[in-house]
Length: 497
Image 1: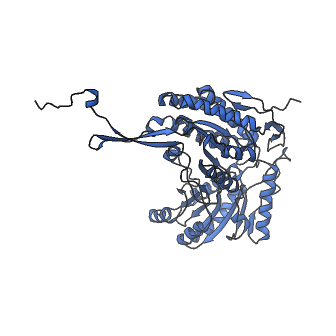
Image 2: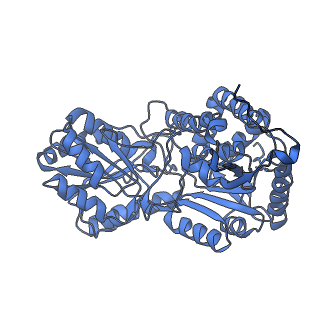
Image 3: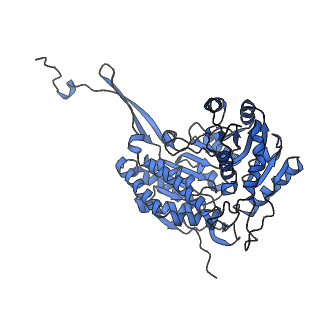
């Protein structure tokens, strides 16, 4: 039997074996096999990571934009060359299918590539003779040591939502990935070092709530970004804010897909199947509620049949549509919420509990599950299930659909399927949700637009990616300057000859 590997920390450019006495097993969710052990960093190890980042910032902040961008150019090439290895690691520890994992790496690449244009993103403003003989201009400068805390569901994409923009803007970074699937994140950080990041510019520490809280309160960390659950996100945001730091938290979701009766039926149903059940529903942008408007409700039996035909298997099966949930606790929670839906009177049209995958009896598998007759006060609607469970709501008009979506506390993502431009325009103007898809079910914007949200889905004014990310990771200095030419002995007389 081979020895189970211990995942190291990354501090000051070196892989460091932790001296922690607290370790967690990293589990293959398809087999329950222990594939690695991850440490919860000691306070001294976190301190060493922050100290390394603080020291590195003294020189990194003065490094030219061209040099920083060149590192990102190198990194995008290295990531592209290592897509198979990164995807394999994601699938091993998270469980999502290989095509889904490869797609995740691709979305992370978008952000790295966007960071390659930092020389135009970090431009200031200049006004000559704002007053007579006085010029006013702005400097867009890095903050210092920054930190990121990520959830388990996108171990490559979520770190890419944070450190590439931050370090290319001149900051240094301490990253804490999820302890459930940390190996691919560490691999990404090592590629960043290979690409040319100096020691200390990017550090990786592992841990749980104590490590995250210590990062929020550390006096040398200037900004904290978090992506994950609402409960943890609120705690991170509030703790960091109380400590005087800049903070952002992208949090919980209950994403709706509104289907109008004039929608292209084939497109709408096929897209809804993938959005609801892909990645076993473990996406913050997964569609967990379908709102069928008017006669589109007649399409529901067809949708259920399509969901029945999805293939559930281990993530390495490229023909699989969805793999296992990340942990036994995740599976138990999803199955418990399904039972609550039954107990509260929703109609269980398709039950994914008890699904059997040949040769993988111990896997955390839950198949596609569909409820109709769902009401807003039911647990399956109130809570973020984070599994392959779709709630179906039926209304008569688009106005009712908009009101229903807006009554939900969360405002992460929403979609509408229609062939009516007027209806789509009404929808996008009246809906109170951060990211809107029109005939697109999972409206995650490309990296040069900001990822956002509204209401309980977001804390902080600025989100990851796009212009907002540059603003979040930098500070603006405004300079008002007057220079006397006479003091330099310059003859300022202008000849008119």
